[in-house]
Length: 250
Length: 181
Image (spheres, rainbow over the protein chains, first blue to last red):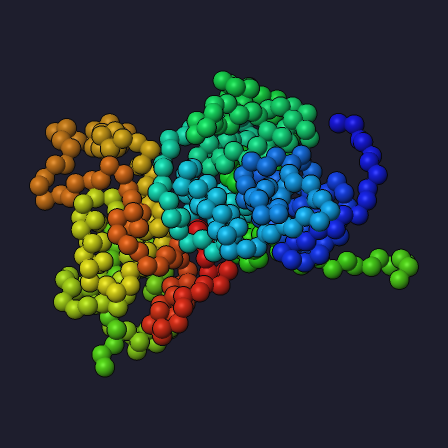
């Protein structure tokens, strides 16, 4: 990708009624984050092109639902993010992801560090209101160092995009449409037939326990995992205090 | 005034949630001041003879007996709580939901690598409850009022929920007490 430098200008819009100053070219999510407001997300990951598939970051822009990760800021727009209606939409999206896959947190290696689970915790979900689908999905353990458990895949495409845009490999892709859509590797073959390496950024891109390094399960004890004590998004809402380096002008 | 009664049961569960209930340590003394255990494996009372304020249900529904016990609990308890992951989402027993029931039975009683069954019979006694096609979370069978996820839910979670319920407070669990593992 070639770097295109566009002149930036200030854009003023409102977020939940509060006036926010942003730079043109920023997305609503980026502008919110810059002022310490966290908008929940799953398919978006910093450094990747916005994808807008999971709809967890849904906000309303002038009353219309839009994904905050793909919507650019514009002068004068009124963005709502924390209304009861929007929270209910987001919660339903998370519940749908829980029932349409097979998410057994009690023995998942990703538990405690899983973003889907963390969003469930943050939203206070104790049980989904939708019936479980129990789809039958395979596990691909053919690769010597990495495995794919399709039971846990939420189709966020973070591995697809990371492998393509960061690792330059295109190890992952989607095949199928609608409810039959699923993650594949060089469609038709197994993970061991790809160029995926255990050190690839794509392995770390998975927000859930669908792509895992082998022989590394349950490394972090309960109580010391990412989301054991603080909700996901805390870092955005309470920016870590900047430490002034010695010798820097004060 | 008599103390409110609490009933508990374990359906398709491992009794781990009951162990977690006992894990409230010395708070159990406070608990027996607050409540009286009615039908529960802890008292070995087999039948409901009184209305219960709270029913704690561990485990999901894997067979027709689980469904019957769950419905009995619903009839006799004012407030019914799904206790733990098996009750809220099926849990480990629900791993059989990806395999047809016939294949499950064949693996367990005929084809499994450690099976010794020269008669080749699959248990089919009239006394045995029939298995459901799939293991169901409790709220897919009866109305459930509160959910305490976790495998098991921590003693602190159970204690916080019970105490709030028994003192008429809203059940609002802090972040650290809602866990799915």
